[in-house]
Image 1 (tube, rainbow, N blue to C red):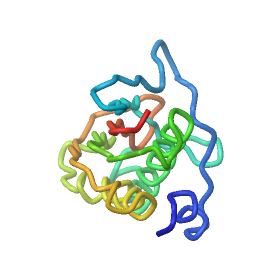
Image 2 (cartoon, helix red, strand yellow; image 1 turned 45 degrees about the vertical axis):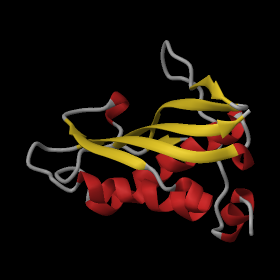
Image 3 (tube, rainbow, N blue to C red; image 1 turned 30 degrees about the vertical axis):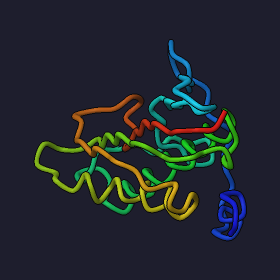
Image 4 (cartoon, rainbow, N blue to C red; image 1 turned 180 degrees about the horizontal axis):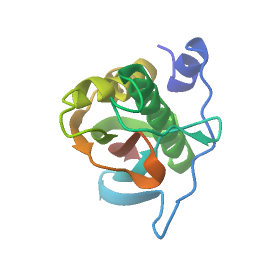
Length: 157
């Protein structure tokens, strides 16, 4: 069975550096639960690719494909935060994602946008990456990014 790092390589992906906080918060908080395990809360990761924010409101400024790519970029940042905090091999279960999509009030494809992140996380983490999720529309996001995603993971400490 291949590791998450192996699967990243197989997919031709590299993790970005774990993004620093953009304001007055920390990127991750680890809360011990039991038996050498913790819940790792990951602050909302905004859509960024090669150091450039992916911005715009769906569907009037950017299309669905752009939004799905933005969600994939958020997922890579989540993986980078996990790797930085505990190492990808210590992720026992990705528990939850909360996905915010910058969109018009009549846009209803937030779950399709969120699939860009969910599908990538399962490709990289395998069964460990299957998670619960909320996908919601927002009238605006920080710096006009298209997608922001927060996560919770169960990790070995």
